[in-house]
Structures are given as structure tokens and as C-alpha cells.
Image (cartoon, rainbow, N blue to C red; front, side, top):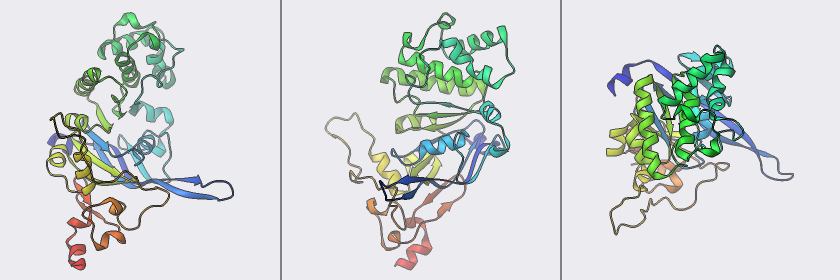
Amino acid sequence: MSAAKTSAAMLEASDVTRTFMVSQGFMRGKRPLHAVNGISMTVREGEVVALVGESGCGKTTLARILLGLLPPTSGSIRVGGQPITGLARHEVAKLVQPVFQDPYSSLNPRKSIGSIVALPLKVQGGVEGRETRRRVEEMMELVGLARRLYDNYPNQLSGGQRQRVAIARALVNRPRIVICDEPTSALDVSVQSQILNLLQDLRRELGLTYLLISHNLAVVEHMADRVAVMYLGRIVEQADTDTLFRAPKHPYTEALLRSVLTPEPGLGIPDTHLGAAYPNPLNMPTGCRFHPRCPKRFAPCDSVAPKPLGDGGTFVECHLYDPQVAQAAA
């Protein structure tokens, strides 16, 4: 982990914002929805950084921005040390590739496995003829797919095999960064560990850097070096995995960790104490965005937005840890 901290930055977001104008209905005009609101984060070479949070918090929007598929409203992205705005689409694709959640919908059912895996080589150029097939078969074997499956179609494969195809497609042109958006959530539990172990092996063998988006905190604890916790478009806490799971600081992080199911009999379904209702992102709370659901809120939380406290790699956005705010409220 210490090696990752001193290595070069592979993926950087600096004060990134993405705003969508959302219709409120007939004759009611549009309102801004700030899906990503001032996010700064760094993923260093060889590192696995996990991004966690409830559905709708902006994780996938941020991933699309980092992939170059969606321009930020403001802020900047650097990939491999280069501003993403100065790179052509195919140059970005050579550096960073995605592995999507659902292998059933992310693979073209009309294409053979070989042609699916070969697509990045054809689109990004530089490889032709027999070399294309050799590279594809080599990558298929690397991800645990037999060469005899080259001419098969996705509907002839299991869910785990399809996800291996998606991984092979992402890696066939040897990118440096892979963004994994819930890479195992659509798979049977018995297959999930195989895919996670494959991703770990490929990381070591190919020198990959991962941004892992996941709801599954057990997966995050197993895979990640650092964890960033996202809530309503902001990263509210970031720390190395051991520290965050052992001693979370932000009340929202504490609630997420309480939500993890346990196999211990008699405990039932855990209560996060967050309530059932998720805030409306079109009607953002004032002050701290989490204060309407926070059991530890106090006077400043309603009106004063917290600032990040800590350094770039480890920080928390919470008034509980700001001595100036606490003193003023006393």
C-alpha cells in the first residue's frame, strides 16, 4: 500500500462538477441536478480505489466522466498524467477501459466471442490479420477462456464466462487503468469470487490500476487499497481500507458499514437508522447534505456546508471534526 502512495497518479479528478437540466413536467421548466458536485480524487499507479455509496449518489456519472464518455460541466480530468481534453477518444480508450455490471447486456449477442474481444484492436488500430487473432486468443487464455470458444456466441456461455469475455475485451489492448462498475453484482455468488480473484491476478500480472465501483462492502474490503465514500454528488470520506473499516469517521460511512448483512443467526436485518427515504437531488438540503438523516447533527449542520478536513488521501467532510465549528456552536 505504501508503494501505491508514492507512485505516479494515473487518474486525477480536480473539482469536477456535472450538472444536468431536468424537466419538472409540462410548462414547469427545468431545474439543475448536480449529479457530481466538486469532486477531487486521485488513483495512483497499481492502486485499487473503491467508490461506494447508495444508488443515485453519482458514482456511475463520475465513472463516465473519467472514461471520457461524458464531459464535466466544470473541473478537469487527467489520465496517465495528461489532460483528457487534449486526447482524442481513441487515445483515452488506450489508457482507460471499463468493465460493466451486466455481461448479459454489455455484449453484442450477434457477434462471436472472438469478434467482441477483437473490437478494441480494430477500433484503436495498429493490429491486423493473424496478429489480431493471436492477441485475442492470448487474452482469452489469460482470463480463463478456452480458445475453442473463439467462434461461439454470448448466449452459449455462462454468466461468469460472459464477464470474462467483457474483461478480455477491456484488456486486449493493454490499457493502464480499468474502471470496474459493479463487476460481479449480476453474477451468482459462487462465481463472484472467481471473477474477483481473476481481477486481482490480472492486476498483478499486467500492472493494472483499478477504480472499483461497488455496493458490496465485502468486495471492497477484499479488493481495495483505499475507499472513497460518495453521498449526493460529494465524496464525504476517503481513507485507506483498513482505517475506514476499523474506524469510520463520517456518520454516513458508519451507517453504510452497519448495513452489511451478517451470517450470525438471530441478528436479523441491520438497521442503518437512515430511514427509507433518500433525499431528492433536485431539492438539495442546505448546509451539510447529510444532515436530514444524520443522528449526530447539531446546529451548524443545517446551514453551513462542511469542508474537507485532512490531506488529499485521507479526509472527512463533517463538522464533528472541525474544532472551529464545534467551538462556535458550543
